[in-house]
Image (tube, rainbow, N blue to C red; front, side, top):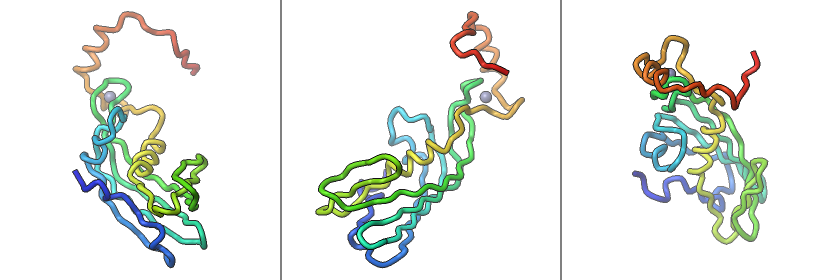
Length: 160
Ligand SMILES: [Zn+2]
């Protein structure tokens, strides 16, 4: 596990820029988020911080691969990651995530922990359904699942 302050960026010190930060996100990073759907992975992340007077623009660029559970056979599968996102920050009385990719950063602290955003942007960039390519599913798992399936169609009516 990395140090707890690994993903903390001191915005107050970034007065001229841009400044670029690089991270390698591995299994330890992904498994630190409990109840997350990402089982592990290897992702290279770059975060470019550009000061604009009183606020900053953080541009995230992430490429790599994460491991997910296949919706069809429940075995693990690799899913490519290629995410570009931006976050705007402004200084204010206290930290607050305003949504819409705007974050208020405490003026007294002046720092932002981007660990959560790295994770969230990767998670948001994943496809809604994760499935092995046709023929790539774990056959043994599929057979076991078939055997257990007791007609549970319904719920979602997938229109074709
Ligand atoms: Zn599968």
